[in-house]
Image 1 (cartoon, helix red, strand yellow):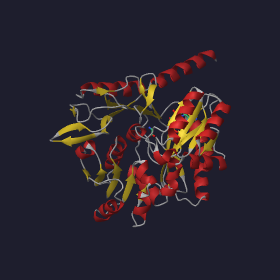
Image 2 (cartoon, rainbow, N blue to C red):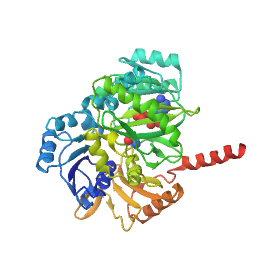
Image 3 (cartoon, protein in one colour):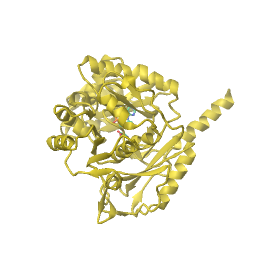
Image 4 (cartoon, rainbow, N blue to C red):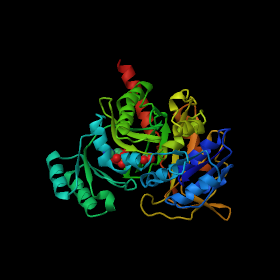
Length: 435
Ligand code: AMP
Ligand code: GLY
């Protein structure tokens, strides 16, 4: 069968790659794809804007594809899935109504409050004065979030009241356009973050392996937030018992809450969680799609053919699938970015992968294209090097030695991806020796 993957990031390259590992998949069409999907055997890029719903539908019908996977949140929030479904096309990704869970933080908060989902206490404001008064009363640390999609830039974790006030003023002065017309002020939660990407057919929901990403640009998790500088899975921070709690306390009640609103949600529900110092998982955000770069770390471990999971979700028969099979190994992905990212950075840098790829090492492209036979950078996050090994240390060593083989002048990557695992393992040893 053939399928379409919509998007152009590392996540979409990983989705196309994972689908093509299945014997059932003969061809993937990537719209618009990137340099990595252009080079991927069995994959073909078609250049089209993500809001060209009619063109994408036409492409799906002409190619007689079995399904369409929509990668990014923006086209989901704009109703691409609705448009395709209205033409009888099977889609993995929620309709516009379900995508609100990511596209409006206020909407998601309301859903969580009604369904008793553990999350940070929050209040929603439509004007700056009330929001500022609330922040002054609550004190810092506190978190200010623009309501809508703001390309990952709408959240300020304020350590001082003044910082929160500046964020509120900036949102209401139109920095994020309509996305900042409402602002959510949220209790600051302390703890480590875990990304649980769950797949659902609207009736049944099942988590994939839990992952962690490194959002900040600087080593030691410092500096401004990015789309994600690296990820690893399955994180030892979320052992199976904790994942079971997430299933019962968060994923299932959220799906029920969506159902009770009449929302038929088919695709990925991504729960961004904080594990509090008491060990309880709390939601800090929901996304309506696969995470990037978590997907590049999680999918290489998946042994169940991805198309079987996707089709089961599209056809509402997820409960009939046997438990997903995973490789018993550790997976890590290190992102190479253009120097200057997430600020101003150069594009058009030439890249040679040399022999960086091997059996358990894949180079996923994010911002690249092929120009006159050469890989050129087109974005801030450019490559994601994923490696699998029996343990995290080896997976990271393999990923970093692959990076050393790549010629990519003017690149930047963090050298400490996975450092939290070491800290965790050390603290495990400590608590074990205390016992
Ligand atoms: P979000 O887009 O909601 O995931 O927020 C971006 C980042 O801000 C998260 O990955 C967290 O690192 C941080 N963050 C968001 N909400 C909170 C919160 N309530 N407490 C602490 N940190 C938060
Ligand atoms: N890695 C964070 C995200 O996909 O939103």
